[in-house]
Image (cartoon, rainbow over all chains, first blue to last red; front, side, top):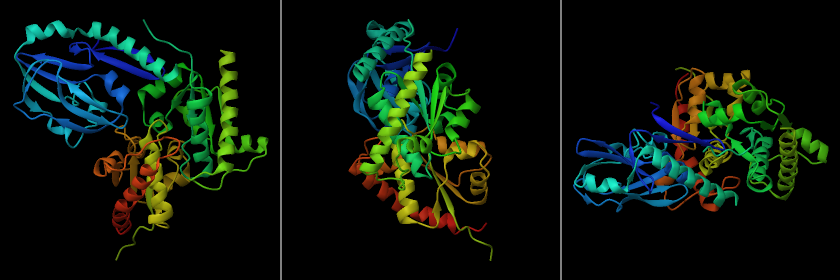
Length: 151
Length: 136
Length: 137
């Protein structure tokens, strides 16, 4: 099984990691036992540009699926970090302060943002997409972005 | 469902050391943004050289036009080394000579004369894009 | 006492796809033309790949600073691919994070804030040029 699903637009390769779950707002969750590691998808980091700053919530913060749990400022835009799952933040990636560009360099790996102790996974799953489903959604979003750029 | 659009990759020399390099960048950006936005993609030469996967994959699969600011032909040579011979190689001093325009003497802060030169080069690049796409 | 370096090579990535590539280039020009003329010097990055002897000589004989516009670090990687360690690598986005009031925009032409940021960054880098030029060969 390949690790990533890939599609190409112009020169850009967009990847979706196969073993993760996805929120429609372009954030991923990797579930291990009762903890989810979360981050930004490859599509979103490419669409929004190089990350300059991150504003994060503190460890211990209770979060609800779909709520905003911080902000990312890139060279193009500022947007909210959307919680793909509900729970309690147990760790903020310590590398994010000095090296926020990890989100661009390795969005599914070292560019993770939070670890969240899950409180409602079974219910949250209804709003999460499997990799293949998100891949199809992503392709539609890519086409929409292209129409915005080129008409 | 793959999204595929036929485009040409434009490889501009970065020419930090000479005015022709800055002119090259300006002209290529004009083509990308105004003259042929639907038909062209920029190949970032430094990223191409440093091993950028997307730049190299695109340049291997699509036609490229290189634009160089001087006779050292870095963009043309690097493209040929790293992905294959470009479909067309343009040289700015030749274009300006053909159009009766002077090469800029400044590295930055271009004025109206240099803008005219950039427009002339951009038009030649756009013509080359049409020729390459017409051939495919 | 050993001989000191006369030149410090400043290599911007000049990435054409992003504002920060243009910013890197503008900072390099500020250093070479205004802040440390005669000491800071440039060469074209792609000359290194096409085996231009003068460019390669500049790299091997002088300390090198790279100014990269994004985390891909193209200028740094290009120098390292030739077997030379970059003496001082910089990512120019960090100048923006330190001076949030000066947000650079524009790729073909930098906006006023971008030009100001380039001047500020060049002044801040002057000490690094002095340090590297003062090192013994």
